[in-house]
Amino acid sequence: MVLDVPNLFIPKAECFGLVGNNGAGKTTLFRIILDLVRATSGKVTIDEEDVSQSEDWKWKVGAYLDEHMLLSYLTPDEYFEALRKMYRMSDADLSLHLERFHELFNDEILGKKKYIRDLSKGNLKKVGIAAALMGNPEVVLLDEPFENLDPSSQNRLKKLILNEIEKSQITFLISSHDLNHVTEICERIVLLEKGVVIKDIKEKELMVNELNEYFGT
Ligand SMILES: Nc1ncnc2c1ncn2[C@@H]1O[C@H](COP(=O)(O)OP(=O)(O)OP(=O)(O)O)[C@@H](O)[C@H]1O
Image (cartoon, rainbow, N blue to C red):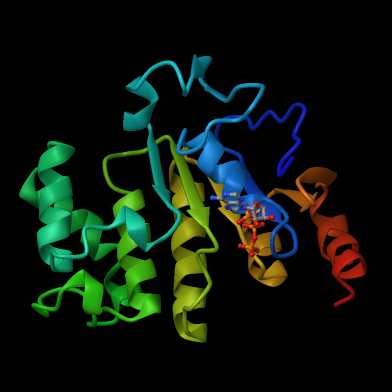
């Protein structure tokens, strides 16, 4: 078995961090939450709705796991425009949304006539994260959002997420290998080892030490 999580409750508006070594099961857990793979037993519910039994939850959830979730034959502008229509947002709402990403995008993403498939790994990630936050999601899953971002972009993203946490009720689920960033952002950290939850830390003061001890960092 790849993953064995008996019971995990994530309250509304919590910023939930997921850490663990390569192959621990972080991405698999996210894929199960999004009903991209089915668990052999057990279920995932979002607001009491079983994700494998209905589709309504999909409008509440934004996610960016990897570049397969993007439409690589579009430019970022075309992609955001397609999502704008899907979410029935106005042009002004889209502009406001993208304005929040102005610093993070660093003049590399919009108005460039470059296809998503030709973007660098870091810039792909930025497009995916901006897309995941469109349409007023209640829950946002980000798989290793800091990976491939340069240091200034990592800090900009951290600020952006902290700002979202402060002003909205979004429940964030964030997996990361960056212990500094994830402990700074999240109020709770779950540590997976070989598919099993071995730590569930809710005390901010204990997080850094406990994780450094575990990872030997
Ligand atoms: N499609 C798949 N089919 C079968 N096994 C898979 C599949 N995807 C992942 N696995 C296995 O599931 C386990 C957990 O992988 P997963 O990608 O969830 O770990 P992770 O914690 O996200 O790792 P990383 O830090 O390297 O991203 C690994 O043993 C992996 O080989």
